[in-house]
Image (cartoon, rainbow, N blue to C red; front, side):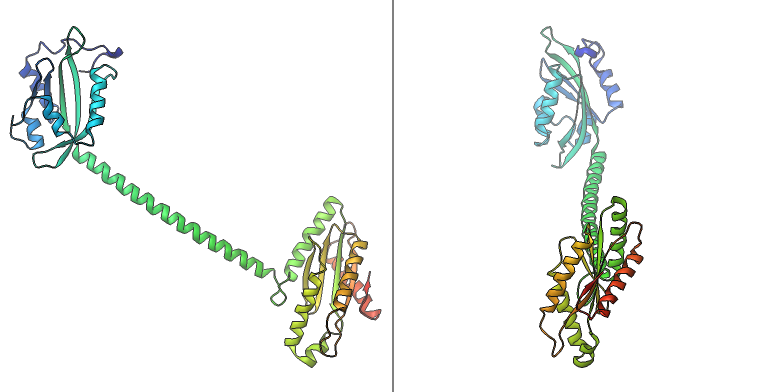
Length: 337
């Protein structure tokens, strides 16, 4: 019952059928039918059409205005646009879903399909028939499903946002824990774990790219008497003060770490033995300028070494430790190689 392809209207295909027979056939496949004689303006609506909308049979005016009056105001512009496109042959068929006002004032979703079955010599519509089908249950179900989906999407978005916040908090906690795991609790500089980790990385880099790498080992001279005479609180504060002075001597890229007790080390990436000597002397002088702790003058002994090709981190640290002990043997407050 559609117009032919190419947008050419069917002419009189059904117009010779007995109207009652046509209406009976259409009634079998729909909830309500309409038959519009455009030349007279008369619109026939089947009993099923009235029953579907709850109106008494044939209680409404048999004109197109009845149709216009029952269409929901929000749907009206869209439906008229679709209808005009079809009867003007800008669209191959007419089909629309919209709400119709029932007798009790509520609205019913219907599907409306129509077909031009005859045109006048000037190609205007002479007769058009159509059928209404009750799709209210389906439309309401779809709307409810869409609302549930929207609610679910909103819930998923909320949960995703919350999960993102939790992940950020966890990542911050992990970063903090990682930082604490690699930080000396008293002095807040790198601890032994981080020292060994970074030294291994720098040894690998030095070996791979054949760049120099130096290491400075340090030990506070005669530190034990401070703890014995003034207590561990003063001893701890002295360590913190020493670290503050050491940090003023560090260059960007150097790693200062507490090796243990009153021992410290500095990793100097891409640095030669001569560069390490200069840094060691700056450190020695900075510590020598620190205020005395009671009658105790704080000094450092230092061991300075440059990595040899193929040398392991453990071997490099052992040589730095040996150089440190040579400083101790030489009278302390000196740097040895």
